[in-house]
Length: 407
Image (spheres, rainbow, N blue to C red):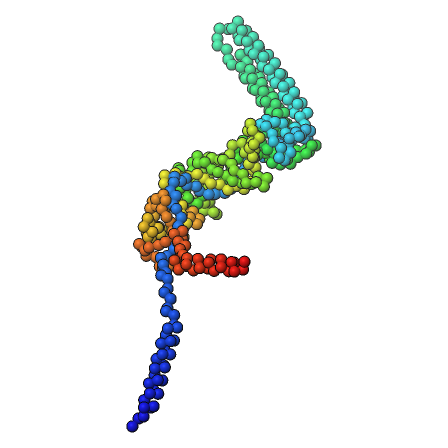
């Protein structure tokens, strides 16, 4: 039979264990409540701007003179005079004297031709007088009709032919004398000079080359699929030219004068020709104009069709002809758009977007039409709780008490 001691000891041990467990349980902290996390995707947006737009077709080209001419000697002789302006890069006016070939022999030839013509005229006048005398004598001798030979008409025709030949010789001599003077055919810049003072030239010798300064041309290659953005395939379109002059980027205005009407065999491009009047600013009244030099490389923007309402957006935002928008309820909305042109990294949209639409420009992991979204600017900084305020005030009180104790 169990004794009282054997019964009490286990009860005491059990009670002590229960007391210890209760004590440890009272020391355990309750689990902290986790703050609720807002999983709404945050996006970045840009406002759409819809406005009238002018289509522009880019191109490039080299500036060349519209007219350029090689000067060639038409007579033979020695160069006895050169104009100071007849040097590479010199500017000359139309009919300005550039060089002179020795005219002595051609003066002599003209005098000889004039003398021959004078002799022929005298012989013609003599023959005319003799014909009148023959006609008068024939009427005195007989009443019959005279023959042409009796009236000396063949002799008259012969003398008349000699006069005409003499006139031709005079004209040829005068023309050759004029050709001893080499003159500019138009307002020009000297491209090169191939002769010097004292040079002997013969007929056909190249003397130099001149480039007209009245008009410059730029051949602009345009892809065939870009012509649709130009009015009347670019006829009379305005062209903005951009090039470099003296190290500075400079702009000029040009006009499309014509299209070449064929596709180049090598580049498979159509060519439009732009013209610039007075490229060297020689006739400009102001000195502010910057010359457009021959041989310059320029980039061009050809002005094309007008679009009443259009906007430009990045190409990568377009998926299957749609773009992602943030609507007024901060929800995702996909809008179908009408793309009328692709320009590098952007596309031109004519329909489907309105001015002020919020275009989503950031990536979405799992986008669903109608899903709730948030903007980065909508995030609110958490406010302090009452406990935080009490703790802060208690801390301030403790700091004040410490200061007083120190005093």
